[in-house]
Image (cartoon, rainbow, N blue to C red; front, side, top):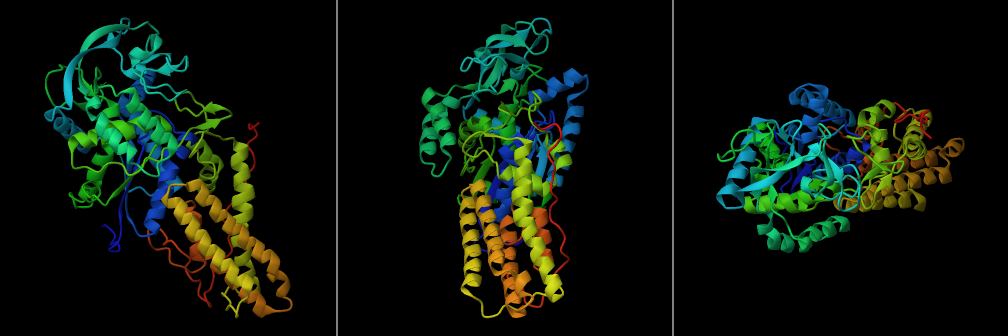
Length: 555
């Protein structure tokens, strides 16, 4: 059942990129969209907002049919394999979805067809003859990703017919230089075929006005989007000669046609919201997010998906009418591994599954959050992940919690001692922790997650410095009242830091709060510094994290 929210609770939609169920996801995907969205959603829940976080596996992507044909199995077998893998990994990482579904549901097909029909009825979709690549050896039309060649913008030799992985430009197969069929290697021929087109150009002026009104967007997102407008928007085919996907809901094209993945995948944010509402037994509940002017929509994607979420999806929403436009699209840049862009299809970068075999989930979350590519590409090595975990997470935060709880057990039998009158140093620490929470909150709200995490770590460093200066292990020999005050203040600081770390480190933060006798029954611990009551019996001092070793195969 839905949780009751305070009267001033805001409706926050956290819409997360849909991974192709065509192969294992890597750390570039984790840093690009999935981890940031969970951190942001957890923060919004912590401050009392009503969050709906949705996504799912994209089961209609051409990479799925490519892999299925390569392995000689059905597309559904590929989908079932990798959707199950995604769900297991999200669970291991502690992701708190409201719904993680697929584009293969009957609900998604119905919602996609409804959007198609509305746009078609209003004249924003029309039927045209077009030239499409045909493989004369395979004797079939080729979907975009079945065509490879040289990018006309950057001369990358392995660009796909829908996009160049090197420069990030969205392409049409006909744009490629020296195109070749991915199926047979043959030079494809252009043949005439019938398709439906989204009249994207009809929305140019409205999109420009809307984009120019955006405030606080990341510069690379806004500049790229406005650049598309300035270059002139081209109408885009939204059907393909394929047999795997959402059925076209009107006649006229003949057999063997489906709605193409880039059109139906973005509709998944709406269809997933409707599916979630139906599961709650409140089928109209989705309207509180989609037909509510006060709602806020945040789209978490990688930069290669920017035009689909700042141009194409808003155009679809405008054409449909009475649906909320994006509030922000905080797209991340690329993660590279030893200089090469992470790519599932090309096997570059550590997979999420391999990383979870090597690192504890919260430790992996921390190391990746500290390296999020928010404003520029970030090159990640395992030596950097290990350094972050050992030198920051273990040494600064984990050891802080462990030694304060251990000293409380050693000197006060695990019972929180009373704080005396307190000194300037005591008051200064708690004031700094409260400022840490305020500063981190501002960064989290603005989706500056790396800065928020760095601020929280600074708070932990300040608490360690406080202990180093007051030395409770020494005063325990001469002044137990002073020792009790020091440990009490340190426990109060840890309580505030645990709440701040919770969006980043959900499992271990819950452990800390439970150890301190604080409430963790809610879905997400409340934001702020709870008071650790004098006389509380603490839980045992259990190490939060283990140090990790650099893998033998890391340079």
